Length: 507
Ligand code: NAD
Image 1 (cartoon, rainbow, N blue to C red):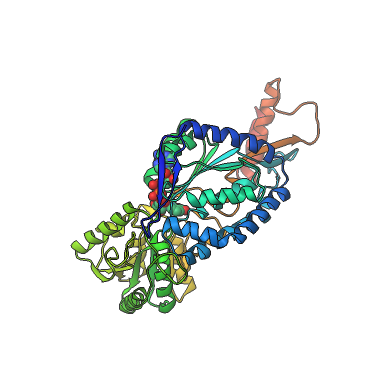
Image 2 (tube, helix red, strand yellow):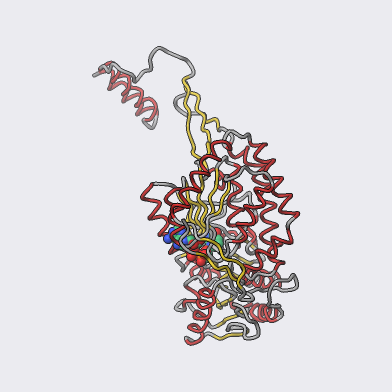
């Protein structure tokens, strides 16, 4: 039985888009039971069959691009150009990637033991069962259906709990997946708030959580009760470092896009910029000029920056900027909710004269704000970049790849882009994820699919002797032989080895 409804609103126009029933704990439990039945039939399906379903799904996504773009844009407030450029592009590529590479990542691995050469050892992967995906609102297709693709290719069923603000994209994705012929109930979506998410944690075999640090901790605590694995893709406060030998035009372009794409509501958005003193002013001037040229608005492809998605987020951004200004920060452009637009718009903003006592440099902002700090040198930039509880992504701009590489090694983050921004998310071959309070577990690459599997080691005896050396019965002769063996194999240095063996024989 449902326990209420969710009203979904277009944040750019404030119009109501839909009302959806909230899934109760019982509804979620039933969804998981159906998913388990579907999974039992899906697991024996060979990889190439699974891939066929996904390719058919991709064709339907391509047929329905315009409908998808309108749906995602309507419930998030992002321009349709961003839906094509981020959500659809990613999803179409990810489907091909997992369909092609899943068999390679999940094929049985032969392990050659260094010691027990008499054994054949193989490690095999099997699906965990039903994957619970709990998602935020900033990429309602990528972080729901996109995350489901590797789970499905690994032979699992999936139950998605999308954000209460943006469930329509996942719903459309599931509808199109079924239209493509994916077995019924293999991929389902349940709507609701925290209680629905909790029920997902209570039934899933693994929880793939993407969201805030605060909620991530709650999910982990609950998952601990059942000892189920979780992956945590949490927030970020990603730094960008610009050195004096950087290509400033490229750095400024990358900064504006990396900080303002999706209205700054990206986990890997550039949220703070440290620029070496000699090029600080020129960099700031270039960034401000570019930001002033951006077009803000909703819906269509001729808009650069859309609206925020949630009221709470708009309030948070406003309060962080206001607090910084009260403490001495200077707004070079933007700095307020857009008074000319009706929805949840915050003007693209550049802040200078900021410091690490300000919330805008300490906590995640998740909005269209670029705080820029002047630094003495690379060492100061590294210290400031690492002065954060988060550790997701970072960018370093320098004319010297060696120097940028050396800085990248010292940054406390899960990834670093050199002379680039945001790009690592779309490189599906490479592991993506955070350290520190940005979470753990990786999407993409081998870990991005193996995390949805149980790994089993199968050891086979190769020679069929009637008994093995350490088996019963125990005897002092066997113990003596064992001690010889230990000396022979592991005592360092031949002289010491021989002395020890002689000593044992003399006993
Ligand atoms: P959120 O933590 O508020 O919510 C995330 C999801 O968790 C929602 O579906 C919500 O309904 C659900 N939820 C809430 N309480 C729950 C509970 N007690 N148990 C189970 N589920 C519960 O996050 P948000 O505001 O939707 O998203 C913004 C956050 O997501 C930002 O911090 C952002 O950095 C992060 N994010 C991270 C990544 C990444 O890959 N690291 C990607 C996108 C967004």
